[in-house]
Image (cartoon, rainbow, N blue to C red; front, side, top):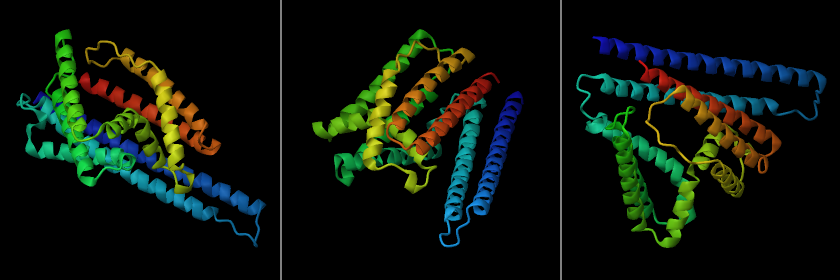
Length: 313
């Protein structure tokens, strides 16, 4: 009974967060629409030119349409994440929690589908860089999905916190084994030239995903060319690797001190990202990127604090 109450409390909490997020986004959209409308009224009263009608109304409607679509996507994604979190909590607190969360064929298939969709989006530009045939690219995606599935199951079947030093060493050894197996399998059908391209692409994947997600919020005329994007990715990667990457031995339990340390590190990395962007983007676009990175930083902190809260329940 206590377990059921805990699950209900968590579900209500997450549902409340979804509702507040939805309300917040709608308020933001309303305030932005009011501000843009007021700006248009002022400009039309002070600089009206019948012979040269402006198309700012079209631009604003386009931006609002894009913002609405993005809001709907965020709501759908948040709903899906809450549903997955609810399933995870049910498995975690269930009386039969000794059964792996991923042992259910239906859940495994759903996870595999989600991982494949992510990989298809993240690695799509790689197929052009390597110019490999469709069959080989499909084989590459399958190997990456298989690796991610094994890593997910490894972490799920291992306690999230309270691990001993021996447990942590075993986990790291198993992770390396999974990664090495995937690496050898990929090497088996990619020649040396293509494999080097793949490794370089993989090392810069976090920078590419950051830019991909940012440009989803911008109109096409504000995006960079492919050459500029590749240049920016390299600059961002150089900036990130300049920030220390060393990770101390960790027992896996999240604390306030660890959240603070992680946020300081992310802030430094994002500062490097912004410096790189300012050398490639226009000042206007760089300012939007700065606001986007700040939003991501705040979101990451909220996620960590929510995890800390759930661990303490």
